[in-house]
Each structure stands twice: as C-alpha cells, then as structure tokens.
Length: 114
Image (cartoon, rainbow, N blue to C red; front, side, top):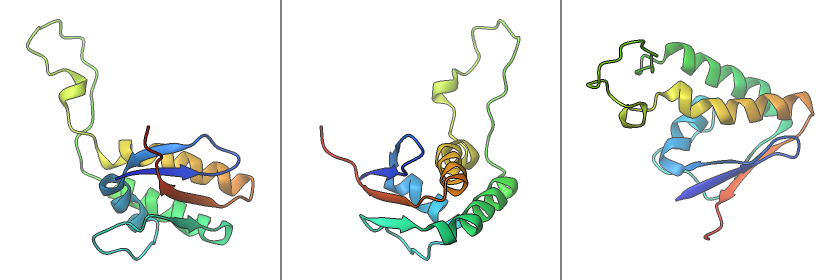
C-alpha cells in the first residue's frame, strides 16, 4: 500500500507502508506489524516524533552512497544500492520539522490510485 503524508505547510510525501512503518515506530507510534490506513501526528507530538526519528537516524548503521572519482565501469550504479533508513526518513523528517515550525498536524492516508 502507498501512503500519502499531508501537512499544510509542506509538500506531500509518498512512500510504501512497509517503509513508513519503521519511521513512524521511531517517531513513537505504537504499531506492531501493519500501519493503519489513516493516522495523525499532532502538533503536541511533533517534538517527540522528531527526536525519535533523529535518534534512529543517528543509530542507523545502514549503507550510505559514497561518491567516487573512480572511472572504472565496474562501479555499482546508485540505483542498485540499498536505501538506508536515514535516506527513507529524510523527506518525512523535513515535513515534521516544517509542521512543527508552523504549528500544524501531519496526517496520512492511502494514496489515491491513478
């Protein structure tokens, strides 16, 4: 399932539910194995959510893309490299920070089918 995150002061963020779940768990949402179709992070919850995600990013030991000057054709293309937690979390974290600055809630719902 695709999930669409909304907040008035920010652009929408779209991600798969299985990728959003660990980010929302880090933000303090008590979800076990599945993400509810709809939800909210209120203004009052934003500070704790941001701190939780930042803490999870700091602890992340996932792979990072490192730019190389090597002209060797055997390099692995960035598109085939795994995406780290910090890379996945960045757009939502930016939305949460902007929502906190503007005192707005962040909501999510299933993305519309095209």
